[in-house]
Length: 259
Ligand SMILES: [Fe+2]
Ligand SMILES: [Fe+2]
Image (cartoon, rainbow, N blue to C red; front, side, top):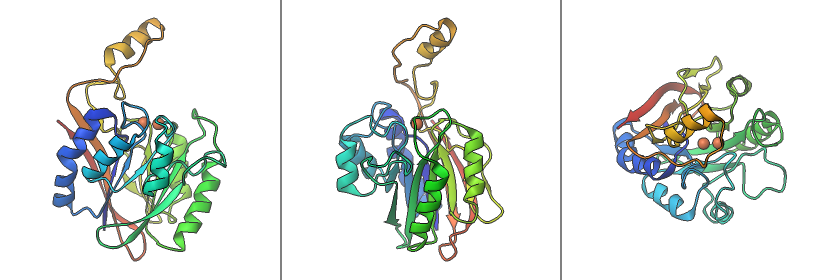
């Protein structure tokens, strides 16, 4: 089976990219399930009900999030009502929502999805490694097909998670940095891996934001209000082919569409 994983969707431009390309990718590549990181989908921060419904219509089956999960308050009720939006499993205990979920792909296969957040240069959270072990154990009882979104800043922490889960998860993909890495591979024990899927949003930008403002900010050191960038869009992600009997990854394909 094939699972399309889409990196951080930023703003209207990112959501439009889904409408333009997800159906085509599903059809051409034979995709059975689409997972996307939606933490920046609503004006660059958070996930609203309107954005959620729109992206579902565009073909996304399930959403992960990250440090911007609470950017729009509605997220709490969306997570409660819909059951296909998760937040990092290692957030402090008592946080609303769930850190993992099992969804059914188009081909009828049950797929476990786990969301984790890094501890390096990120808001305080529990160990993602302990949470990963716990969640994999729980989901393994139901399905061998498990996808992990590790939302983290440090490439080292992300690589470490890939090796830690090698043979335990079907794929470990990173999100949060908005820049796609070129290290797509299958690890020794059958886990598909990429350090970061990249961003789905305004292409002519710094991480989705207006580039002039960010350049001035770096040049002068004077804080300025960030604004979303406009213009053409890009869609970044990866397609992982997984043997649904063993849960092992057999192929990985990079997706980078720039308008
Ligand atoms: Fe992001
Ligand atoms: Fe993030």
